[in-house]
Length: 244
Length: 244
DNA sequence: AGATTTCATTTGTCAGACATTTGAAGCTGT
DNA sequence: ACAGCTTCAAATGTCTGACAAATGAAATCT
Figure 1 (cartoon, helix red, strand yellow):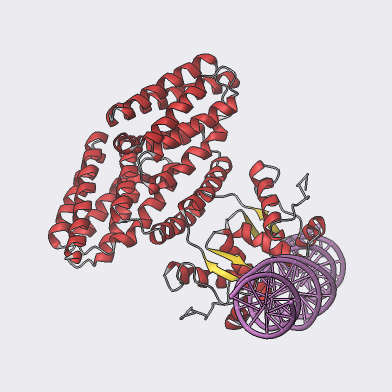
Figure 2 (cartoon, chains in turn cyan, purple, yellow, brown):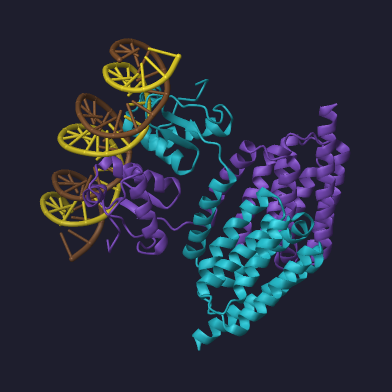
């Protein structure tokens, strides 16, 4: 195991310090992807702690997807290659909690979401594949079905916008936006969409898809801006209706 | 403790299942912020597992900042209010690892960063406080100092852009962008900035700050676009120089 | 040679114990 | 009666030792 730092401070908990030492080794590149960490017994000897303490440290790292563990003879803890897909879940959970616990109002969350999405629109207009466009069209079609529940409508909305963002072909953007888009869904679900508002949204989605199809980033941006304004207005009506 | 689900599957590890049960209770709102979880002894009885197993589950949650623990008579595990600042660190670590492990090229990362930043520019032009503007100006001044190291220059660059983003006054945006901006810094640090390129960047930063000061979002956006193009070109030169 | 068995290694789990922290109840002196 | 001190109990942090379960590799048998 090369040279992992083993001298620990005295203040914080041992499991935290050990977890940090290993995490630093991973981040700094001392431990390579798919490399096997020393066994728990070896680690406990190296750090002069008991195995349960080492295990608590490893569980912390596993919770962050930094390592995976495998039982058996050739088992052990291995440095994980953190994939974008794995990080999505984390990102969404964290974003959801942030929104609910900090009582972020719908308008702020919505503003962030559409600002980020508009950033993707021009790129998506240039690079989207046929698949992305097909997904967008399919979701628009679903959104027009009369029998669709409000939850189903929101889920389809999310799928539509994810396709838009993924169309930009930039995994970093897709990752960053996963949280923004998916975390807002629960907030959106609180809105009751009338037939009239659904019709409007579908029309705006169609405008966006048309613009994306023709490669016109500016028009897609404008349509997104209109959709953002409409959505915020819808939420305001709901709030006003409930408030008085 | 209200009604936390206690019937677990048999496939995965117990500590994972317990962690998920508690996490679900937090996310769903069964457990409120600052509420105290049952003691480890009570939990181990409730889930029919040993205390070490419960502890491993709790460590997983602690690693995600979902709970905090406190020793002593009135101690225990408490549901954490997840603050934006706490989430920043997580976001940055994850983003950094994602970039390094997936070998995202500088251009992709840079594109994402500037796309997101441009999304913030119009909002920042409207809402930024005097503090934000002062920070931007101060960082520009630092960037003009001749003795500044490349690392120092990059750090100042990050500070400048964070002030720009924070100026939008949308914590969701600031959070989302923290990862994008800070994670790219290590990649940026590999670039050697000549006196000439620093001069150019400072000039572009000044254009951005001027636009923000005058509340002109469109001009800020244009300047950011120019900066993005220049940065990418700089990186290309470095790559070409190294390649041949 | 191929299939089967055995086995050593490693993680997962458990039980019980002690150390440490820390708020709160109880006591004491003024 | 009140402030300060002591004691105590509850809870987490850590350790020791052990067993269970999984699993790949070596050894054995056909």
